[in-house]
Image 1 (spheres, rainbow, N blue to C red):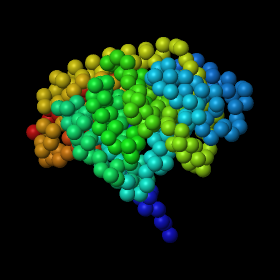
Image 2 (tube, rainbow, N blue to C red):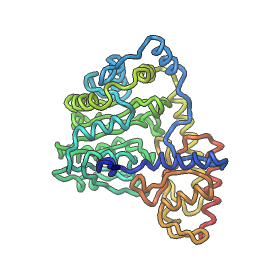
Image 3 (spheres, helix red, strand yellow):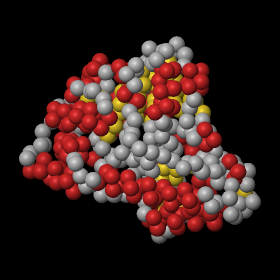
Length: 397
């Protein structure tokens, strides 16, 4: 008898991966699809990092690694936090995991009991919601709009916190919106968080190296809440290492110990070779991160300029990451050959079929009047994709 646990049944399929799979199927049928769906840099891992991995194989890093990560990698991450972010996390406060998702799941499972509330700021990254659901927590979603740059206000945050609130998940630069909170905006939110000592904050800073507004600001630099902030990061986005699967956290010592205990039963220490590559990444003095950032900035300006020429599409220029999230409200209710666009899902599948451009519906991110576009692809593909989108939207009546 087939029996899938309620815990697994409660999870949704990742919409970003589902759209990626659908576009890949069309490509295999010989259909020319431009994919703007996946959050993955289109750059190769820098050579110095690849060389470190090759050397690790030759040096026989083929045995079990320590559960929280190799000591020298944790020291390097501690140094990186200090030098780049102004944060004092000792190596004992750092846990290395199998990607950012694993890191986030470790934290959620370590602090959230069934029925406790977790605050999400919508639009939010797709997996946050399922992490909370899996832990049997209760998501409390604060809605924002494109008019507010998809940012939450202190008043909204304070109104959402109750005695049952255990966790707040904060993400800047944001996936899916690309928006970046200023120091002043963060300080205003911190003043609210200060009032509620039971609330732990995850600060997901995986896109820190892709900011266009100056130096990245870590939430844990606000000293009044430092002892309640878990800083989550990884090597995927800033170093073009998505497939290496290395994420890490800096956390209060008690929480790092809890995550270490949890990870010891689930995965043990993560891939030894990938850890040696991550050590080279966080220690690297090369300019590869800056070159990638410059390329993303150029692409951002290109895609926002082109999208801005499409009548009815509302676009705000993102300040980080490699996403833009247009508001498509004006197309809701329109139709094509009798097919009515009831929501962002309908519009996204229409654009896949008619424009042959794959994107992700904002519904997956808690924003059903938006679509997420990843511009982590070439200038030529961006130009052609937006041309196709404009042409297809022009067919709606």
